Image (spheres, rainbow, N blue to C red):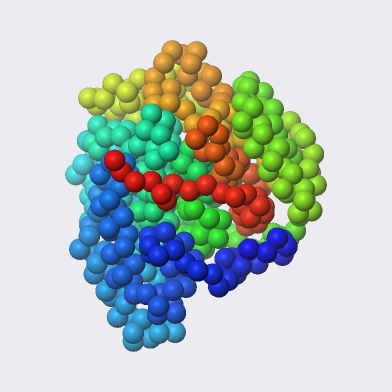
Length: 488
């Protein structure tokens, strides 16, 4: 790709080059382009990805449910449509994609990793699934999650553990761990994820891929099996695409954001702005109050800052506004809401790890009454004003995804002090989620064989500003890939 930052990074991704022999190694952009050019059929694409899934998924356990007959029928219909009207392809025509286990897919159980929900079959697609289907994507599998999608470690009593392809003793991330592993290892070209405390960004970080948490309200969150959502989910939870490149993430984002007013929190916000690709002032945040940023993460942040500076961005070191207070607000709201259902549901499960992790999170959170809960909501508004001013001065913040390198399994199952330290290390993700901000995880390379990356954060609904800056970092970075993973 060109080193000139002119905003045409998606088009540059389509420039002529030799594609890998194995179709499953192709990017989503390449698959859509080759299907459009009629050099490969949707059926051929699907077959290649099914072979890859058969090769590596039995070991990794990323995809835990797949309706292959439906996927084959979808591919055949897509090919028939292309033969009838060759000039009317959709943006994801024939692109294989996975869907996280916590959103509704018609005719399938939305278990969210909980055996008690094994019979909760969705009567219709959620908004995001319908949007992706309408864009031409072929949904080839459901990806694993921790129970309730509420850990940074993907394991549950219904489907078991999802392994990290880089090292089996290291977490695959959570809660979109299955999604990250599926796209990192070439089982799909795009993956769907959700994020309320880093559940897209952290799995992307530990698997060496790109993961975009959108602004809450950007992607419709309507699900037929969900009657209502508490305030924390409404204001902090978001969906987004995960992929091996920034260009693929953009393609997924465009498909996901089709309108659906059945979600009362959906916002009709424009995606593109005139200054999306303009180099701006960037806050380099390599010190996180309450935690110690490890040397490897600091080095990645400095490297990313230097790359952005070379592209015309102005870099200034800065401290984030009251990040510990943002985490406290997240805990006061989300964990208070968790006491109205999730904690008791976890207690009823035959899964000591889920119980221990969720209770550990709850024990670290303030115990608040109704007045305290209302005050936390008001404090969130005050903190958001401070971050608005910060992001007005620095339109992009460059900060850790996590202050630590990818963590060993079970790091959230220790003492209360260890859980507090883990929460503090993850605070760059929790704090920004608490305020409803978008963020993107960008890989920077390997450290002792494990992925390391950085996070970019911007103001609400400025996802393309994030993607533009991420593309600069990606373009200069040699990149890493788990595509060479082979099960043993």
